[in-house]
Amino acid sequence: MKHFIKVSITVYVFSMFVWSIWSYLQVVDLFNLNPEREWLGSICYLPHGSRVLMVCFFGYYAIPALYLAEITGPALIDPLGYVDGWNYGAVGSLIAVAIAVELVKWSRIAPGKFSLFKPVSFKNYKYLFLVIVISALLNGVLANLLVSLVNSSVIVDVSTVFRFTIGDIIGACTLVAALWIIFTTLVDTRLIVSPEEE
Image (cartoon, rainbow, N blue to C red; front, side, top):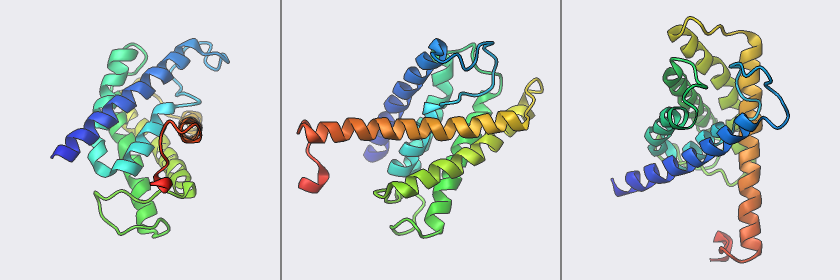
């Protein structure tokens, strides 16, 4: 129980931090990718990277906190920017990540014994990238399908699914790259100790 509480707090704080950074970048829209401010899905959706990283490294203990962040992130940061029924889309997004992680586990290409609650070893970033791509493809379909079933004003077409998929891949890879740069810099400057040196 103590582990679950620590994981939940860590996941929620990290996810809300990523939500707030992404929301700021979305509002600023530096490259004018969405001039009409219509609901299309972000072309660089950082919160998807948070979903993937938290489920990959903390297992299914992270899912309740991720869902809470998926609900409170839009409600606190940008309450008018999300369509009705987004909470169902959030369920679809988390299911997509869980399915992707399970596919990698069941394929036995990632080392580690199979367990629903044991994280897969993602020391090799190829497997992490594979989870990002599979979950982005599934999320593009699942999240839009669930939102469109609940909210009849949302029309799902191929371009929206494609934009969600590309946005999830680019956003997750951007977040992973940023964290990699931050942590390798901290290790190189000896502000933190590398696990290999312990």
